[in-house]
Length: 331
Image (cartoon, rainbow, N blue to C red; front, side):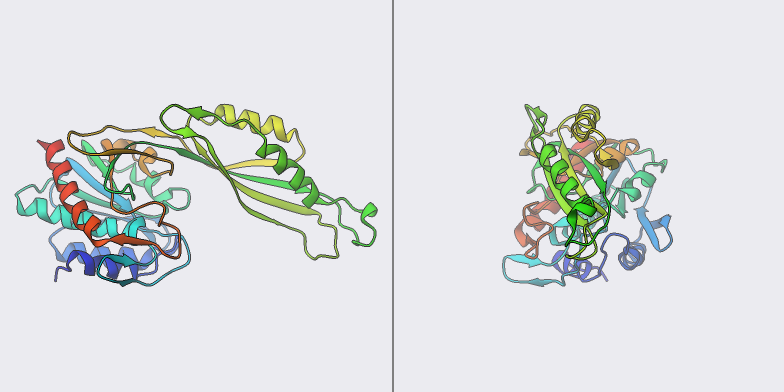
């Protein structure tokens, strides 16, 4: 039985799929799409984690977005205007809208459309990186992220960095006998905060966030280890920024680049509103699936929050926009 757009969105939200735990939602979509006439293929990423690829015939265009969400799981609810819950706009409402758009295109006799839903976008895009090895022969990719139903013509990249400092443990009553890794880390982070960061005419400023800090074992012990996780939102290739970062740290800490995604510049389409986004997507890792476009309902300002939501009007509009964009590209 085909679920309506809002019912499907809520059903997807109510399947917990925090990054690394996408099995249940993959199993549901595999069965749901097969029931609706698709040939469905699993692409195993890790044990109990797989991408879902569905098609009727060899696709010229792929709709794609991600299955995973950030923690914690938040069940769905709705009112007259919005649907709420973890993944409402990032990106389970988008999954539902893309499925409905593909169904509408099939009703119009356009069946060379594929659906690709990947794991791990909120982590290191391991699902997208593996999906890029699929030989689908598609000419176009419409990736879904919350862009307010505007075509994104550029998106920032990202670089995750772990900074680790080490010291010497001692009783806090005799700090001169130890060496605080936490104080070292604070000094390094303060210097990083003063770094000049690149700016781009279209993408704007490089964003920087200290997302996590940890270290030590107790208040009365001088910490012998500390670390921090940083996130840079890139507006250009990361090479110059990495060199500057290493120069600022100057051997005072261990610097490890945990992930790196370049910024991307995308095409617009006639009669579509456009925007520029500061977040990172799977698009840089799906280069073999066709010319990419980025479009989806909802606001990124609602994503990753305890009030995450997507408006019912935007969901409905997204289906029509996906259909219009796909037909325009294929024709």
